[in-house]
Length: 115
Image (cartoon, rainbow, N blue to C red):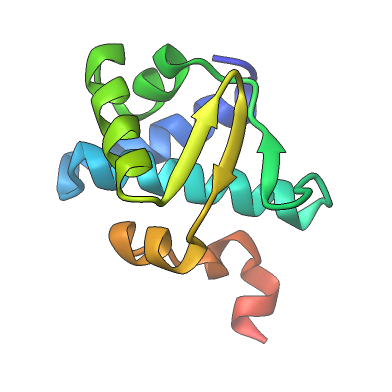
């Protein structure tokens, strides 16, 4: 893991995973959240952002093997939803990816969500 914040996210995501999410949904959700967080602080340019994580890191975060992570990323790429290569993430269809994992970014802005 890269840092404490990512570890905290991993713990929260694992709890969600154990309750209902498929590996596909979990990876999609993680990518949505990382992309949204990067966008919120101005780190997304032309739809791309740097996510310095390996497939092993992504798998560790969602509780699956790196082989399974690779299969999920290939499926997301083949569906035209994401490109992830050498630590660079590009979400090609944000709305479709969010629908695929039921991602709702309001929890990233708790004060705004309750206003």
